Structures are given as C-alpha cells and as structure tokens.
Image (cartoon, rainbow, N blue to C red):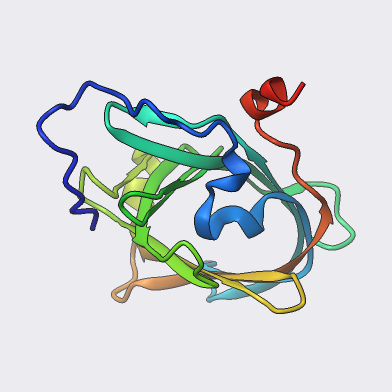
Length: 215
C-alpha cells in the first residue's frame, strides 16, 4: 500500500504541475484511446452452477486534467466500458470510473462503478515503464474498499476484487479480472472471472487543459 511521505503541509499544491496528462501517465499511457475486444470470456454464478459466456466490448479511456490533493498529484484516464454478448443488443455489462497514476509514489488507483449499485477503489504499485500491473480491493477496508447495495451485500457478497493488466508487443493489451463472491447458500467463495484482449481502434485526444494551452 502507498507509504509515500507527503510531509507536514497537507494543503499546498505543487507549483510546477505539467498540464500534459499524456506525458505523465506512466504505465497507463498505453491504455489511452478507444479499444475493442471480441473474444472476452466471463464465468459467473448461476443457480445450477457456473455459466461461461463470451462477450464483446468497447472501452474508452479519455485523459483528464491533472488532479491534486494538496501535495498529492495524480494523472489519469476517465473510462467507460460497454459489453454485449455476441449478436445481442442488450447491454451485458456497463462500467465507468477512473484509472489514476501517482508518479511520486508509484501508485495506481482504479475507481469502478456499475449500475447494479456497487462501487470500489482498487490500489496497486508499479514502475512507470511497467508492461504488467495489478490493483486490488477488498471488503471491509476504508482505503481500497468495496461498497455494495443491501441486496448484493446479502446475496452476492463481494469479498475481493483484483485485475491484472498486461500489454503485448503487438500493441494490444489484456486483462484478467477476478471478483471473489460469497454467494448466499454456498459454502465456498465463487471466483467470478473475466478475461479479454483488446485492440486499439482510435487514439486518445489530449486532456482539456493541454488542448487549451496548445492553441
């Protein structure tokens, strides 16, 4: 977990903030843009046992302006993931949030919200040039925690969330996601997994402040 020393002054923001987010995203730089995946695999719990389903998806990662919490400085991407089953128009999964990089601490953050009334904050550490990284969240902590609706908390209790992102030499990237659930009526936790490889279909535009200063 982040053990960076921010000093005693928790109010003063850095004076030399670079406005160009794309130049300061560290390991998140390769995610910027629009991506398409056509061979995702989802394993989810059903009453009669695990169901394995294929899916297609589009993920947009848009650079945001630098963010500061006093001395803490973050660069990031706002994202939207939209998922369908092949041949179906109905949304299978919808997800929004932010991927954030804190250069001074080497820390990654993912915020995640889904319209099933659940949200979380996952945290991990990485080098700026990392080609593989992971972040995790767990139930019961106020730092990298998970918050769920009363129904989900009672029936499909999320114990832990973890995602591993891997970049490939051909420019594509993959994720391997594991959401550990305690399903009501079952003795053992269930590993709800999602795996996919995506290819870029559009480049990212610079963040608003960088565009403004580039005029």
